[in-house]
Image 1: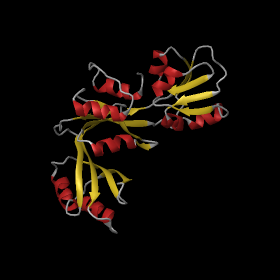
Image 2: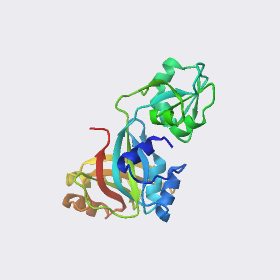
Image 3: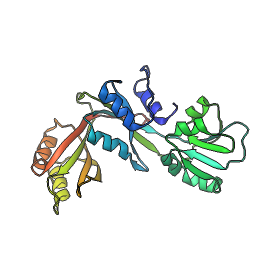
Image 4: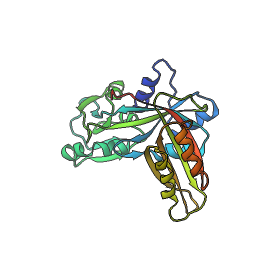
Length: 259
């Protein structure tokens, strides 16, 4: 415990009973089986891109996105108390990348080791090691905070999604996530798809290609709007003539970062 995902989940529902899982895939399995009613997982860091494990689980399962939450990420460097000589820095690979400038300037000789999460890095460090993660986790594991705000970019944010088995009602500000599988691998298939959205003035917020395992590609696409919006309906009607469309969810999009 002590991850940024836990922080996002707590802000989404501060009186809910939280059940930690080691991996994103475990969260999806727990939601699908009904062991928990909802799950919270990261889907995109605004500096380092998408979390492919999350996208792939959305594609493979029938679990739906119910809400998107944007959280500001502020990293700190922490050690066991009394440690001054840091030979190893541990954290999730994305956190290490997000703090590379600070590490290059201050601990260029220290080895960098990736862990399952920022919280597990802080929980498991021993003397001679440091960990990068949230200050909440540092306090939880009784660590000494060496430095705060060590990220490369002060605007570091991560989008988390709430996933569940039910389709949610339309929100005031809606976003829709899709997976589009072209029926045939032919020139211009992506261009045609994008033109369908453009012709209906549908704002695309994200597009990510992914090999389908059979020599072709699938496309993850986020759009502004809801599947019940007239222009979205018309755009998708054009796309399904040449592609298979799976709706991962139409859901409210909110910010927990004050902006």
